[in-house]
Image (cartoon, rainbow, N blue to C red; front, side, top):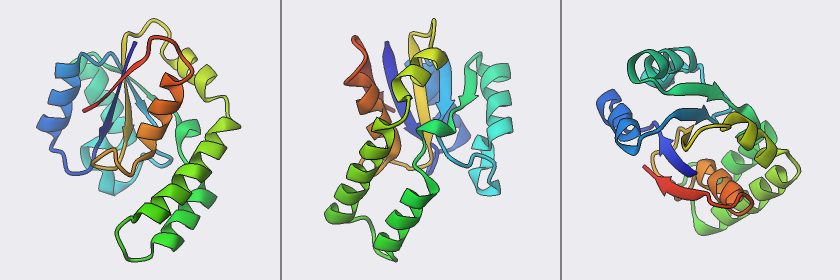
Length: 153
């Protein structure tokens, strides 16, 4: 199975859907905690589900279990302040998030959501994977499910 990841920030609809189509994505798992913000544009939950399914034949599922907790996000943002993410802040976040997901049924939920799927894509907001939870979820799954290959779109 191939697990792709994609962020919505900084992408046009043409670029976003083009990447999914080129990668052969069959199902998109929306792993954002909140997916209904007006700031989400074309990736707002219900609209995104419609576009994916009706226009591209890609199934959609919102899986907030894979998102960081509100407490973790609050702690991250308070440590971050108005700066860009530095190595120490990201190391703290990574450690905290990995502890959170180790206590959740991430692999079981992932396998249930991807049954019969060969190419799945994890969606969050961040433009790149360097400081993003989608990469950490993909690595968590790949480390526990045989045959998973990760590709960042």
